[in-house]
Length: 178
Image (cartoon, rainbow, N blue to C red; front, side, top):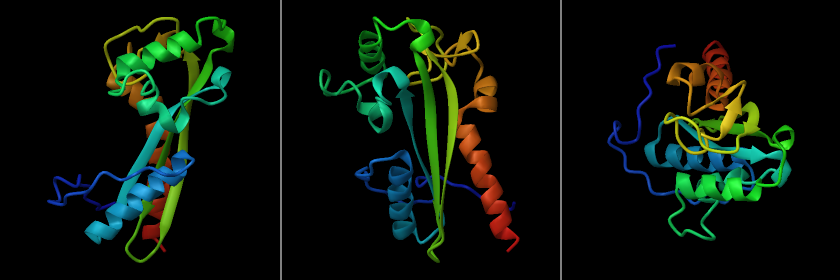
C-alpha cells in the first residue's frame, strides 16, 4: 500500500502514557490513537487487547494487563496467570471457554476514525505450557496446544491481533481508493 509504519520512537516522537479510561477495548484503542494523532499530526494506529473468560463474566477483559494488581501492585504475567488459575480452579475444562480480543483504531489528522475488532477463541488450561508468547499465552489453549507452545508464525496466522490488523488493512486499502 506504500505505507511506512513507524513506532513513536522510530518517528522521533515522545508519547505520554495515555490513561485508558474507556469501558471497552475499542474505546481504549481509540483514546490512544487520538492522542497519538494529536501529538504527531500523523495518521496513528493503536490497539487495546486482552483476554475474556466466559466463566468469569468476561474478566479480566480490559483489565487483563493489571488483573492481579489487587494482590501484586506490579502485576506481572506470572501473577496474572496465577490469579486466573485460582479463580478457575473448580471449573471443568469444557466450561473454561475464553477469547482474546484485539481492537485496532486508526485516526487521521482530517478527523477520519476507524476501529475494528479481532477475536480468537479457545479455552484456559489448568497449568502454563510452553515458553513462547507472552501474557496469558501459556494458558490459552487452541486445538491441543497453548499459544505458548506454538511458533510465532502459527500464532500470527490465527491470533486476535492478526484478525484485527487484516480487517484494518482492508479498510485502509479501500480508503486509499476513494
